[in-house]
Length: 480
Ligand code: GLY
Ligand code: MN
Ligand code: MN
Image 1 (cartoon, helix red, strand yellow):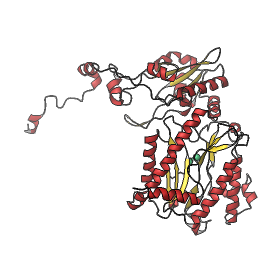
Image 2 (image 1 turned 90 degrees about the vertical axis):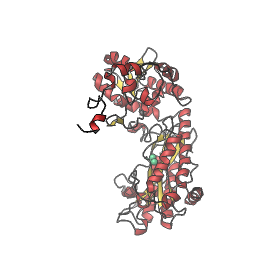
Image 3 (image 1 turned 180 degrees about the vertical axis):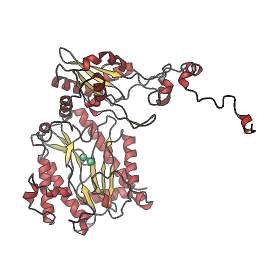
Image 4 (image 1 turned 135 degrees about the vertical axis):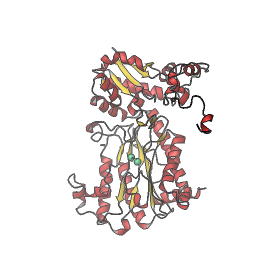
């Protein structure tokens, strides 16, 4: 025996204890806690809006049992999970963001009765109180109980386990994709009809939802200023695109729930790369900087805005020429947004401008008309993505809608959508003259269809190159 061994405590070498199997511990940890109850932090008006949304769905699917779920965060490793973000359809119907929660709308003679089934918090006395690192109150802090949730949501709330006894009644139900796990458990299919219906109904935003989107856009506009103010530091200290991406994400997390999608910061030759979320490049001092960023508000409604700014404060001649053409296409698209106009009209209007501009620059191998025809589309080499989409709780909102309800529909008041033409001239595109290679420009605004026309919610950010330069210089000058 060595000298060191004599210092070992008598229990050294015993097996690491499982706390749940230690009666002395479980007895002690279960008692003498003050009864702390928190109240759900719902955005003002959220529960009333959700109630109205349920009424619309009830009228659309009379007599059906309807099920939607909040979902759960995927496991990353062991007890580390990816961040939880409740399913958008579920939030639209409940305003509740509790992981594992399930909504069932049980049909009645006059409509539906909504019941939200929630996992009760793990409180002192529950094994999960100390054993569940993701839901135990010892780990995650006090949370609201079922009674507090019932009061906040204005619906009946029951423990999740109470739904087990009713699984048989869910077999013929309309289950949302968010309830796919439950569908599997009860032997039912996910309902495409419900998914399509939810997407169709969610396309028309009510006044409360428009307010949420306005707040998300306003926070996003402030975030653009915060990011551009960090450009000098990112350049001087070689911090690169990630510093700017992190700046926006911090802003979004501080003033909202977080970024509504992966923040895109593309400097110089990265700007034409559509989903440049890797952001591991430097800030090119004389490059154009494409910023596609959106704050998701606490209510989970998100903005989706893009501006392309000169990192130096002044566009080069080639950058400005590309920006001017994109601006022209953008204005042509925006002009088409009003009630009664076909959804795709903005797309065709913007694409026509793009195709003509590219033809004038000698970049199209065919005529403008041939390129614009459904069987041509050569101009899309430089603009392969969509140039707009519905916006709401999801950045690409209502994406499960039927074609005739979305692409093939006329615009109605209450629609919120993006318009986002761009030109993406990749650095290695041999069809391009050298001066255009490595330039990417997108202009993206969030637009509300009103009773008489449209309102650009993000118009606090300029779109004309000269104004963009002026705005950029003002924020570069604000740098610390
Ligand atoms: N940022 C995603 C999009 O513009 O659609
Ligand atoms: Mn978009
Ligand atoms: Mn975007």
